[in-house]
Image (cartoon, rainbow, N blue to C red):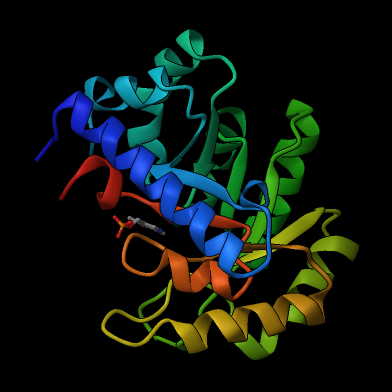
Length: 224
Ligand SMILES: *Cc1c(COP(=O)(O)O)cnc(C)c1O
């Protein structure tokens, strides 16, 4: 269900206020937290009013859906910044690198190799995060926590990828705090500065634990 344009704008404002309050509470500046408005499943008509407020960071979880929606939106809002927050297949890497400004789901060597090649060929420089499966869930993407630091190392030294952060998606129905704490610890180990964690239900907790990028969908655009 799509909210009215004014509702989405109000929602954005209130999420921004809550982010600022959570940052202040943690002794941080609000500007150290990037709000990614997750627009997956929503039509361009629902996204435009949010773009019109000046908000620039958006997240999509499917390459094909983003290819259908964003080339046109990016032409009209050229300074928008598009984040891929969902899984990436090797055969979609070239398209993903041409469209996305950040990729949060690097999680295997084959993908890292393909990304490295596409980035070199296209002369692009996307912000890169390694996804960590903090709950060790069999069906979920991401590297295992105990493999995270060595994978980041291989990305840098074997694949030539400048990984800047880690991302996680805690198990559904579990308290997110311990997963955010683990991700922060792994990022310190891997020596990466950025943390992509926290969604509509728990972004304040994530900010308290050091999130630099929160991915918020339904609290802005409404239920999916
Ligand atoms: C959908 C999605 C989000 C946003 O979820 P909400 O609960 O709607 O805020 C964040 N991260 C990922 C990876 C997602 O797929």
